[in-house]
Amino acid sequence: MWKIEPPLENRKGTLYIGGANTVELAEKFGTPLYVTDEGRIRENARRLIRAFKPHYSNFKLKYAIKANNNLSILRIIRSEDTGADASCAEEIKLAKMAGFEAHDISYTGNYNSSSELKFATNSNVIINLDDAAILAKLLKFAVPETISFRINPGVGRGKYSGLVFGGGKTKFGISAEDAIEGYSAAKKAGIKRFGIHMMTGSCVMEVDYFSEITEKLVDIAAQVKREVGIKFDFFNIGGGFGISYQPGEEDLDINALGKQVAQTFKDGTKKYSLGEPELMIEPGRYIVGDSAILLARVHHIKHSAKTYVGTDVGMNTLLRPALYKAYHQIFIANRLNEKSKQRVNICGQICENTDMIAEDREMPEIREGDVLAILNAGAYGFAMSSQYNSRPRAAEVLVNRGYAEIIRERESVSDFIIRQRVPARLMK
Image (cartoon, rainbow, N blue to C red; front, side, top):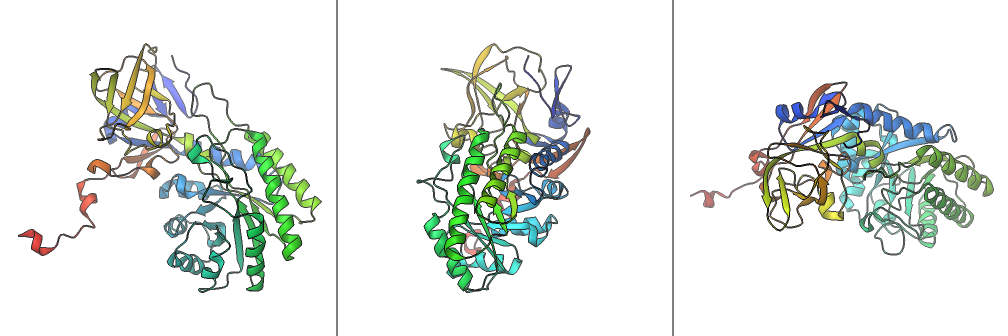
């Protein structure tokens, strides 16, 4: 029998999430189906705030919209006294639609277009630039009151190589030398308020790493202050807080992390006389990752060189396994109490051999018609899904204390063609 942990429950061999029966959800709403537990999102956001704020009161949690952009989920997170981190103009629009105030929205794009920069300035959000040279493009539209630059502190870490965003081989951020140039130009342009930002990796599970990179960012800020003569109103150390995907993996000790980062930050700002600037974090995965599961229906099992379990969830619905070889634990939702006794490849219906959700996975005997629950699907699940092979994207359901509500309808073929235009000459 597998170990079931909150927000999941094992009720007589059937998987429940947020008090709702997953097998019944699959029957009612169909599959593939993303199911999100509202209570878990709130619990995760509150846990983060409790980990940091008691140790540094001038603290703000901002949610990285790219992890999961569903408006219902954004509204839940916004109600927990959070801000938002937007990676593009569309996410700025979504944040405002969800009720986030402009002053609580940070825009961190990269390789920005002029139209994106113009939109960001007109939106009055906090603009965080990925390159000092982009400032000149921004100043063509307006002189913002506040500007921030994304720093590459020279180090990076992540669960997979594709999740490392700092160091010498990444496309993100600027060096301390370029930062001095950027902040000097910003000061000369008449910008009054300044922040500094970094984002070095994703799904990092080592507590000490976050205090190490915080120290590096404070050191760079002190260098900028010394050379340029400005003060920093806020520091944003990014996100990257990992969650446990594999059985037996220890959870990140977020309380120890918050306390350690806050102490490092206080020591550094005191050392360099940087005052008491606001400390921000911008996690996505940590807030929504373990709040959702993805339900799949088993349609066919093929016995050949290996046993292939074919489901209606493929790389079009959940890309992470194909993209990173990422691991997601999988349960048979309708038969939780059976023991593992076979090795199978669990795949989707996409015309790619990389369309594998799990390879050589030890599972109980799987039967046609079974409902599989793919865990930790709340971050970068639907957000990275596609219509490849002309397959509609999944529906999304929100559960809260046993009550289920649809928060995104399943697509149909009309969604493929709604914006297509066939020239009249081809209609003959």
